[in-house]
Image (cartoon, rainbow, N blue to C red; front, side, top):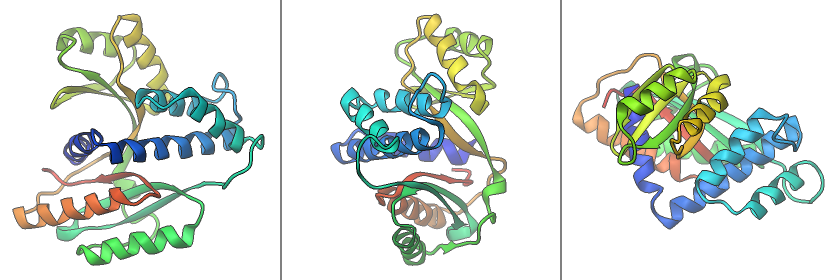
Length: 239
């Protein structure tokens, strides 16, 4: 899981800034709108919407923003229509890069991503060129300072988690996508506060890069992550 952990840590550090917090709001608003449009506006019957709302609340998004996003998606309010997009490609040194985003203009988003790849030594690939390398997983995070590792791991495994790792100041708990809610509830039942609960993608294998290519890949990932239409960026680098 090296490719995921390093970049996750970098992104979490960035998310402490106001600008990154605004991007997180945008990410979750769009995800809520897509989930509500596809599965309806009731989180009790729409698991994807429920997970998106939990993520939004974890970054302190006001309830009014969440309600308004659902209303827009279900036709109760006007506004743009967002759709999911996936882009795949290769960075310096052959690093596989998988990008998930939401957009109201596919042509604009594709052009922006292609420009970033070209400027930073990468190549935007065809659909399916790297997606097979990345397995969808549920990811739940808990602060390490508040809880003992054994206590968290025991509660997580009992609730259906597959694995747990420590990254900086967080326990990263992995499970199947379908088990996200059950694991979250199991932790909360054990009086363990959950920071975030969301879907991620884990590389099935990783590659080693020299220091120069690592720096180039990090710069490429950083620029992709700054694009408004990009929600998540995954890579298979063994950092």
